[in-house]
Length: 324
Image 1: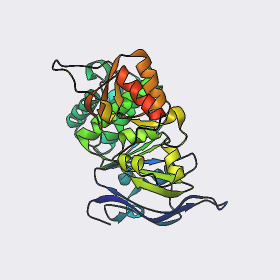
Image 2: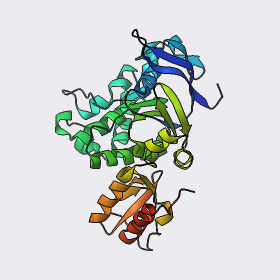
Image 3: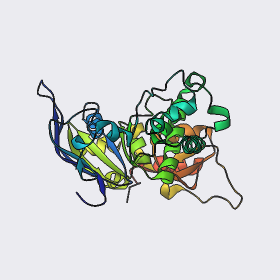
Image 4: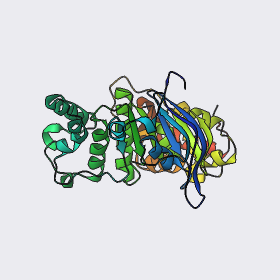
């Protein structure tokens, strides 16, 4: 295990009683502070891989190390206190306030109460939940997207070294999902937590990840940065999965070469698009907006107007745009 790595899978297999191998001889290193996305079709082993990190599932063979130490040798409660966990269906305690929900794990760790409360309010502000308005509300008084924000910052409240996220936004509508992705990019930039994120949505992976691990039938097919996968997919499976084969409206386009600089006057675009975007999303937005902001890695890099967007779409259709 290299010094920079915090999590390492060493030839890890998870096999069930019927002989099914959910994970098959997996080797993977995750660096400290890295945001890695596990992606693949249903049943590929990505959630099983995630759950083996905090011992919700035990491996059949092989070793999983955290900071060089086998996870099986950690006290399981203390292990989980240092690993934030966010699920698709966020399980907030319905009779507790938002603030109390956020403070559940810090209180178990017997942290200083004033320090805990201050951190909870800081995290709420980071995701656009004004503590003066939301701290004393109950979960039933929040929208689905707001509840999911609380779930994300609850996982971070005890300042864990590792954050696990299992398809946390997949149950949300597209607008709420995009907002949560933007919130997560900001949290990523601010706190730099080592994050393992599971999704089946390649567009989400391209937007969020430092590195993507594509899985199929319990094995790793390819790992690389979003740009590496987009430029050099390892075979037809990866190429089709990222929408560069016969993806049609689900093809991933690169907006970076089509953006223009913001004008001298400060601009606050009504809508912001990721630099890597599915064709159908670009068509939908540009049908309703003359222009949109474009962000890359959480940073606004410029604007794209309707004319440029449809020139890009027309060129892509003729096969004249290539990822360099």
